[in-house]
Length: 262
Length: 293
Image 1 (tube, rainbow over the protein chains, first blue to last red):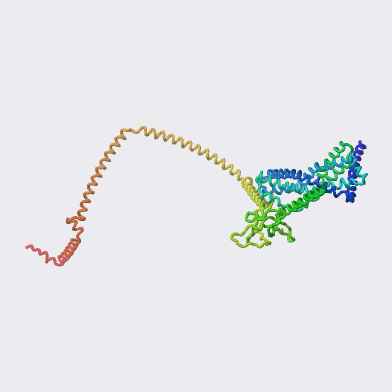
Image 2 (image 1 turned 60 degrees about the vertical axis):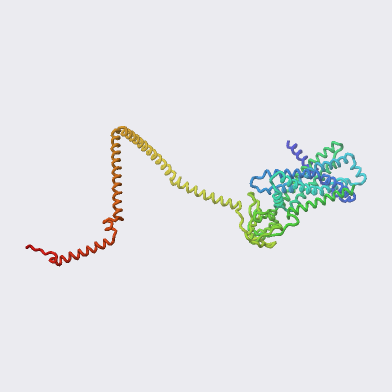
């Protein structure tokens, strides 16, 4: 009994350390691949379009609903006697500090991350990656590094657009469907605002972008043979990325929350 | 294809940067044209944050741009006031609660009938703000303390000091008195009933023929009295006629009463009679000459 438990614990620890180790090796390969400056810059631009430009519409739609519902719910959860401008304050803090970057990242995990894993995984199972290595191309420099760089740049940009769309949507919802006036909403938006709150939102978005690209490209990179392997890798990538995003969200909040307060 | 990607990505990034910077500046400073700064020093400003509204006579004229604690322990608050508004001289600033959940605002209270204004960048004198929630709670504590003292005094007077027992005793005595009054009232009621019965009996025993006789005698007396009244009236008329004649008629009495000449002659006559009597007393033989033979 004791021996079985010990073996189980030993196996779990070893598996975890192995997982961390292979991710560490992958990170090392990515850093090394930065030397291949003839390979990754062009692909990075293309990936920026794929990850960023092509996700703008989806991001704005999601953020629009997010802002509208947040403002609407906030208005009707206020206790009697609370000044109406609190709606603007609560909506801004909810969206800029938390919901904007988090939901944008989760949505892009499904749209961009899954696609990333599927693309690289398919290349792996169809031996295209092996072909690249045969042609002396660094596959990490061609497949992983551009995606990670693109995600690092485009996630903050998309988060900024999402925050803006959500706040505009919240304003439209409030003036069209509630008794909150524009002056109240704007007054609430400005209460206790510091530019660092925007930077905090972008820090989160950058971390989330790195997690999406890093995890999803790696899961594609190690996909097993066959269509099932690609599907399995995609599902695993989405799950791990989602958990990683929520974990990073908590870590970033714990580190930076004291600096966010006005 | 490559060129198109670069353009799209560049466009999106530029757009995002513009939106981000413009939005942040708009939220933090109220836009590029932010108005002019004014300053206020407060000894206490719990809950005061940048972005909170600045009201002049209740009208939103700006917002709090910056709150900083200066080394001497006071709060230096930088206000951003819109350019279309001026702060009148004599205006005072106070930190006041905005709602009941701890939010604050800066209230600027202008002095009435002032036509000069503070210069941009001046420090607005600090005035007295309205009561804060803490002050209200302190007042409520004070009231509660007084109520407690009052309750203790009431307990001492009415419970410990026996006041309650006295009240109970007084109530019991009052009940007894009420019962006695009830008994008396019942007795009086019985007596009154008896008196009423006796009165009815007396009234029933009165002889109506005697009453009629009395009434007839009373009528006769009244008739006689009326006749007497008429006779007196007639007499009065006659006396009045006589007096009228005496007063203005040509008779002797009227002349005697009304004519001064008659009075003068009578007076002269009386004088002469006095002189005559005096002379008779003095010289009786002149007038009386008695001879027997």
